[in-house]
Every structure is written in C-alpha cells, then in structure tokens.
Amino acid sequence: MNRTLNRKPIAWTLLDAVEISASTVWPFRGRAAVARAFLLPAVLVVGLLLVGLGYIIEYSFHELDITTYRLKDEYSIINYHTVLERPVYLRVLGRTVLASLIVTFLTITLALPYAYVLVRTASAAMRKFLLFALFLPFFIGQVVRAYGWLIILGREGLINAAVTSLGLPTLDLIYTYPAVLFGLIQYMLPFAVLLLIPAIAAIGEDMELASEGLGAHWVATFRYVVLPLAKPGLVGASVVVFTLTMTDFAMPEILGGGTNDFIASAIYDSFFQISNPGLGAALSVILIAVGSLLVMGFFLAAGPGTLGFRSRV
Amino acid sequence: MRGPLSKRLFLWTLVWAVVLTLSAPTFVIIGASLTAGEMLQFPPEGLSFKWYRQLWQLDDFKHALTRTFYVSLICTLLSLPVGTLAAIAMVRYRFRFQGTLQVYLLLPFTIPLVVSGLSMMLFFGDIRVLGQLWPVGVGLCAINIPFMIWSVSASVNALDPELENAAANCGAPPVQAFLTVTVPAVMPGIITGALLMFILAFNEFLVSLFLTDSRTVTLPVQIYNSIRSVITPDLAAVSVVFILIAVVTIGLLDRLVGLEIFLRSK
Image 1: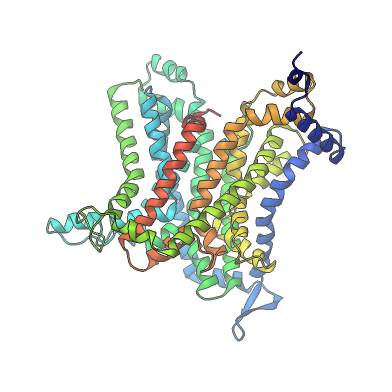
Image 2: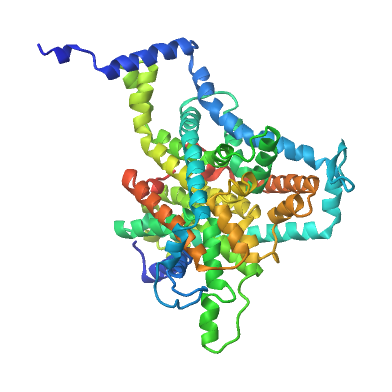
C-alpha cells in the first residue's frame, strides 16, 4: 500500500491539536457558555461607545468656569437650563426634526418604487444595473458626494453656468434648506432601498396576481396588498433614515454652508468653537433622548421591522 | 415586470429619476477632475490628466491615503472575528436577555455618530491613546459593527442547523465542525460584511474628524477641510480615488458573493 495513504494529513493533526487545546482552554459544558464567549468581543467593542457615553453624561452636568475655561468640579444642571433657555437651540432642534420628517417621507416614497422594480424586474442585466447604481453612491461616502453637489449647485456650478449662458441671473441654489434636504435624500436613498428590498422580496408575486385577478387596479393592489405586506421594511427604513438624518453633520455643513445648521453642528460648535464641552455634552444627551423617544415610540407602534438580526419565523 | 402600461411608466419614471439623482455627483466629479482649466467650470476647457499628475506629487495626499487604508484595514480585521462570532451566537443560541443584547448590539446605530465620535474622543483622550492611528480603526469598528453582524446573521439564518448536527453525528468535534462546516457555509455573509466594514471605514468622515489630528488626518477629513476653503479641480481628482475604490469594492462583492445577495427576502 502507498505510504502516503497511511499517513494522517497534516491538516488533521493540526485540527486535532486545536481541538485538544480548545477543550483544555474551554472546559465548560453546555451551549450557553459558548454563546457568552462568542458574544463577549462584540459586547466589549460596543462597550467602547457606552464608556464614552458615560463621559458625555458626566460632562453635561458640569458648568463652564468662564475665568479658567474649564468645567467646574461641582455638579449642576445649568447646561440643560441654557439649552432650554436659548431659543436658538430649540430652533435648531426644530429645524433638524422637521428636516428628518421631510427627508424620511420623501426618501421612502422614492425608495419604495426603486426597491419594488429591483425585486420584480425580469431582466437580470437590469437588476445588476440598478444594484450597481445603488451601491456606487452608497460606497462613495458623504463628503465626496456633497462635493459633487457643490459642483452642480454652486454659484459657479453646472446649473448656474447653464443658466447664465442663457442670459438669466444666477440662482441661489446652494446654502439653502432645500439644498440640504436634497443632499440628505440622495444620501439616504441607498440605505432605504437596501432595507426595503428584503420586505418586498418576501411578498409573493401571486398575491399581487390574485388581487389583480379579482379586478383590482394596480394602484389599489399597491395600496392594499404591497404596502401592508412591506410594512417591516417600511418600519426599518424609516427608522434608519430618520435617525441618520436627525444626527447628520456633513450635509448641513457643506450644502448649508453654516446657514442651516442641524443639531450635530451645534454640538460640534459647542465643543470646538465656543469651547464649552459641558454645553455640547448636554446637547448630545438631549439629542439622544429625543431621538430614542421618537424611535422607541415608533417601534412600540410598529415592531422592529427588518432591523432585527434574526429572521422572522 | 408585468402590469399595465400606466404602472410600468409610473414606476420606471421614478426609478430613472432616482438613478439620475444617485449618479449625478459621481459623473460630475469625474468630469471636473479631467478639466484642463484652472478653476472648475462647465463645460470644461478640454481634457487633461494634469490634476492627477499633480496629485501624485503631493506627499500630504499620499500619506493621508496610506493612513486611510491602514485605519480601514484595522477596522475590518477586528470586525471579522468579533462580528462573525456575535452573529452566530445571536442566531444559533438561545440564552437569557437575548432581546436586551440585540438592542445593545444595535447601539452603534442608535447613538448619533456625532455623539459616538465625541464619546470616543473623550475616552481615548483620557486613556492617552488619542493621536495614534490604531484607535481610529477600533473606533470605526465600534460604530459599524452592526453591519458585520447583520451580514453574517443573514447567512446563519439561511444555514440549516441539521448540517452542523450531521457533522457532529459523523464524529466531528466542536471546533472541527465549526471550522469546516459552519464557517464555510456563512462565508458569503462574512465576505459581504468585511467589504462593507472596509468601505464604510474608508469613507467615514465624522467620527474620524474627532479622532484624528493634523498628523493623523485621514482622506475624507482632509477633503472636508479643503472644501471649506476654495473649490479646485485637484479636490475632484482626490474624490475620484474614492469612486475608483468604490467601483473595485462593488466588483469584488459581485465576483465573490454576487450583488444579488442583497435581494434575499426576510
């Protein structure tokens, strides 16, 4: 007999060694211990954020000492008072929440047909193209995309070059609220479509056929069959788009040019412009509180949608 | 797609409007980077690669690019074991407080990025690692780890648990069953997650803004800082680097697992 056939492959020997060392390092029985060990690294990594959050909360309860420009040692809620007292912060918060609602609604409205066509189209090439068109901006990042919009919408940009060549006056497209909203919608579209796809793919086309077979107009089918069945996706996509918009920094900064600040800009400015980290920390806590309350309320009303890690049974 | 003409017309109009909105910045940036003129203008004054040549001579740019690669690599390498193990545990095992843990692991998505960035800046500053490059990679892993867990858990959900039981039944000890059955079966999810982690870290701006300084600045932060002053075509050439890397990543994703993996129902 050939000698090589009798010899154990090195990979097996290695695996056996790994197995033996694993059973000495890990003498526990039962699946719960394994699960805990598997989850520990992720818990630690996410814990980084939680520890940091502790710092933010701690900072928020210390007033700035104007004479030394350091936070005072004693605890106070003066920073929260300041936020609520100064109308500018409430105005910024209001502007942010309003933008989040508008962007969420418009993004979902545009993303739903895209996701639907992507799932339902019969052509594999078209599906590939639509996926590519979706992933390209998704993978390009916010700053670069905002820069692209700056070239298009800027005072000496693409649109204004065309407008002035026709002899018309320059348009103020950039540094406006609509410009910020537009940039945000473009930024959120890939997120929304990707979260809607799993829900729409779960709807059997025979459901729609049945509805149409019974004489429903396609609009009615969409309204009464597709929309209710796509609810988990709509929930997931809305929550993600809403929270991402509410906490966005780059789009309002770059496309708003300082005239349409969102709450994230106010936080940034408290830390780095007026050097009052306590105030910025208080604003951060308020942002988290408002955001979590809104999202939690939404989840209570609509369930976790497509956001859960486990598939629905 | 089936359906009456009105339906198809309505849907395709919307879809093409979205395609146009999604692609417009990309094409405009590529166009602007190829302009021969000094200032950005449309239509460009003829084609030239001079901005790319100039870019290649800038040490600032090359260093920032290297740093961005380094940070993204740390983020990806860390997320591979962390996210994969967590996803397998979340789907395959039943334990107490599972719901709470799911909420906990989604925290990076619920905590605003601006707050995450500041939090880690304060924490890293306190333990005196701020100003180094590796904490940036770790920080980016912390804020994006749900993407990794998501991708892998989608694959674990699709994997029949009887396969692992069969391996055990055939005498495979736990580690062997894990390495030769479970890991290869969820490989598409692992690859997808790793590519997502890499590209998201490569593009991450806000958290990097807080965790880097002038010596450790990464490329997205540098672009942001330059946007604030004057708009010049060399910035467009830098942006094209991001477009190229995005295209390569999509190509890899399509080759290795197929973009259609995102079309799975749930």
